[in-house]
Image (cartoon, rainbow, N blue to C red; front, side, top):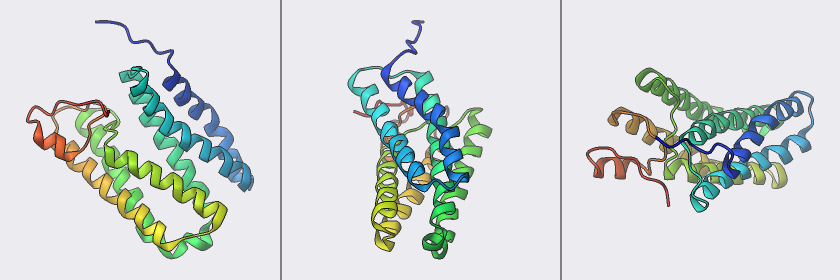
Length: 197
């Protein structure tokens, strides 16, 4: 079996997100809102870029997919922590829907560990679009103010995408990276993964 090349541009971007995580956490708990926003947006942009570059440069690796999934979880945990710390007044009336999404995400994570012994790394189309929506929501929230309509669009999509992820995990026999979505899983009885193109 050919050895994977771990020294790729997408993997470097993922590694950056790990390195920046303690710094972002410090920005949150020291009340440095502007620096938090700048760095969390950079992280969200690099999250979108690493997957795009992996496909365009043909530098996809299983190791990179696993690390990207972990980096995603860390980035989103920091983003939502910052949201609660800096924007609690705006977000408080909507906490039920926010924590519903977080609860479902934890269920998906636990289910993946229990069934497959590893973290979920499906990277479906829905979760990718959800990531873009969440990044856009953070940008609008911190630079222009809270938009209830945008929030409901973002959180509704996020909840539906994580439900899809749970359903896929219940169907597939083994965890593999980069499944497009439930439609493609049901379409292929053998549940082969496909690279998102």
